[in-house]
Length: 512
Ligand code: NAP
Image (cartoon, rainbow, N blue to C red; front, side, top):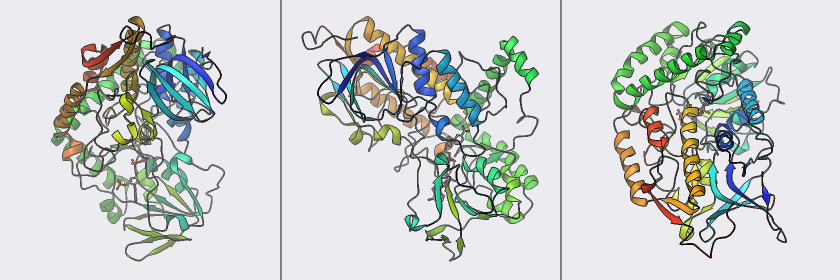
């Protein structure tokens, strides 16, 4: 429970051991880890009015997980009641709410609490974190669970602001706007768009779908993409090992995928054959078949799974537009070939400002080092969790810990475990702070860069949001998840500068 400190004139001071920012899978997972370890002195700060992160925000029609359900949950909290093999957004949000309730996180959650800046107080060994509502938090350790994909990316298309119709992004879906009988433009054909396009295609009068680069899509046969009935759910409830068996098989399938994605991209050509065949059977018009066939190696961008996206392109009211967008005017979209399409609404399925959540944070570390300056350039980090110069800071789903082939929740659990062990060490030895050594960090990033060279994300011949402007892949983990788990199981404290309380004696105060 939060311990309130002295009130200053303007600020309420809350002094607790751990501050967690964000209440999605990462933030809640960290909270649960702390609870399980008997640490009650923490808060979870959430800028919105409810928990759930990505799964609260992304509630567009058809929103669902593209990782199989049995794998997409905390390992310690299996859910026998999943209703679909690929869970829908409402049931995932429900699952997170269940976890928050079961692990009694509500007394730790502080909603509508947006952080404006965080500064490390070297003498006290504490993070001073300011929230917009005027509260000053003091944390011995700060955990950022802000997610990599939550700031909508709105492309800077000429004239975009002049459009007078309805505009929204897939992650900010306006459910009050009725799409029935409207002429609608969708920009983007990524993971989100292929889920909502089939949902809205039947509703709208006309759908112009603007594709810049076609994604590789694998079919999801009905036998796989099925509902999970009551009997099966009851069985999982009674015999949890059955669900665990499936979870493990799915995880190993993902690890097998890593063999190809990371080490042997040429093996992916077999998946391309499957996808090409699927295009031929699912799409009637040969011109559309050609237009949706990618010219880069499968896996270079995220591989998508759907059995209703291509059929939606067969509809008479759906037009796939592959000419590049020239500009947006007050009433529609003009393409580079000079054609104009008048529309009532534009929906951006254009993805996210990757890592923007972390960049947005105004963190000041040792010697006044600023994260905003640091993260503009090449992102240096250790295990995707620590940033040198920012002691006692733990980032969840930080740089190079995203996945293209397995469940991100696995990575989150590895990271929350790692952060917990560091926090326990800080408390047990009453350390002022730990800060990853710069040379260790540089060696780590260099190794990641080397390993990245042979991956499909580097060799596959595509542009993707995985890479920064200079072509560095700052998003994905180039290895097996199992390796990441092994490397994060037990922190190697020789990788850190450790400042003991003794050295800081007299300067520190009242560490909780
Ligand atoms: P995305 O995969 O980044 O797709 C963005 C789409 O917008 C791409 O087709 C992109 O084309 C297009 N685009 C971007 N800027 C454009 C411009 N200026 N003009 C025309 N087209 C433009 O974004 P997303 O679909 O929102 O998905 C993002 C990520 O969220 C996914 O990769 C996945 O990791 C996650 N996600 C997960 C699930 C899940 O089920 N777990 C579901 C949805 C999303 P280009 O390819 O040419 O750049």
